Image (cartoon, rainbow, N blue to C red; front, side, top):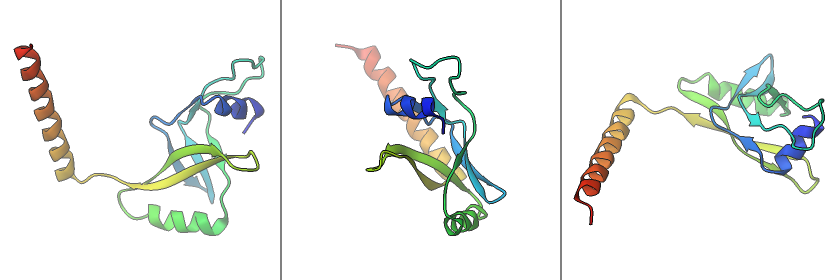
Length: 125
């Protein structure tokens, strides 16, 4: 990471929406992680959405890679924090996608909640 990225992270200017990790040639990369440009940076400021390499041990990468080969698993960033040595660290996790019947249930719940809000809104006080 560049210096302006770390300074921006210290200000809490990171956005995880749509970000994910992938393994390429034995290296773990994070994609679509948005770290806003540093407010006091110069023209040498960083690109907010560039791909960033994560440093993991080879055995960790192999363990994650074997899980990713199973169908439905995705590697996602969970949080960014600074350790006691003031180094930026990222916690990543394996996420499993929903099955089709789970998706239908979620959509059904969302629709019923929307209907209830509409009904309550129409009745009013």
